[in-house]
Image 1: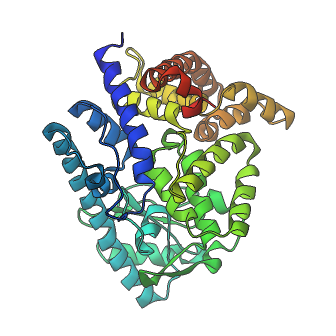
Image 2 (image 1 turned 180 degrees about the vertical axis):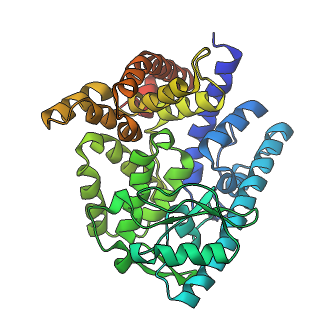
Image 3 (image 1 turned 135 degrees about the horizontal axis):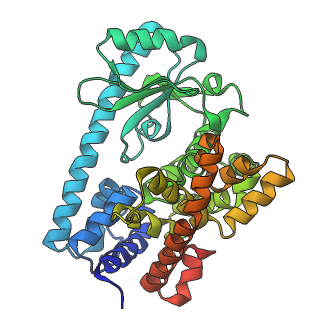
Length: 396
């Protein structure tokens, strides 16, 4: 018997399983298509599901295909989430217009990235919280001065990849990149970029660069988002127009990251199947369960914030790869890189910050907590799907 809080996560996992094939359909499928009704779930399960998966807008568009209306409480949660996502999309669209005008006036090559690029290409709007753009490194000073002169406020510090975020009134935060880790081995991305179909004043990465950046961001940069429905939809949109040779080039880039090649392959395969409208089994159910537990407020009691954050990071390393720590250590020491590199292979962002013994000790202490979390997540996946489906649903 599951506790009531676990039952909400189990119900949310069933909602994900129901939504995965539905979200693989085009934004406006043929009216004759019919889909089965959503599984029974309370308002809290719907809230967990929509918060963790960030797919409210596309799901709301496809809901009429299911025939049966949602219960009033669930529908209220869905519509509230759709309004919030719509407001964020409109905020980014307004920023694209302003930036397009600036790019045309000043002659910038301004490349829109990730989900902002999907809007610039006229694709289905997906949830986003900020707008990332890429400019040539030599243009960053001029871009910053122009944004500040136009009334934008700088709201965060610069990094080695981008300027601090810029905010104009209450719209979306704009992050100006002058380098991208995903494309560090593929120079010339700005020069290869193409005019954006929805606004020729802006540019988008060429198709393989764009799909690789989306895939890299969802696997290596944000392990906690691996396999989220929103990120899978963005990847599927990015893949949909690629030809066989381009898909081969994308797969070659993914397999080149040997420490995470298996995770890339799972994410890419799920994205390809969604792009074809045939998603198959859910390859990321365990990661989804971990996300749902995090949204629910599953952080272990009595742990301070640094430890909780480290547990969260280690959790997704374990969730994505059986034997992740073992493989990470083996890979790093085979190359003579030591323990920091080993931990980077389990959870990449941690490796960039683990600069001293205290960081390594913190991560080592977090491992048992993370292991217990993932074991609990796997049990919830089994309970939501039945043991016969569990291995196909994220434990492969």
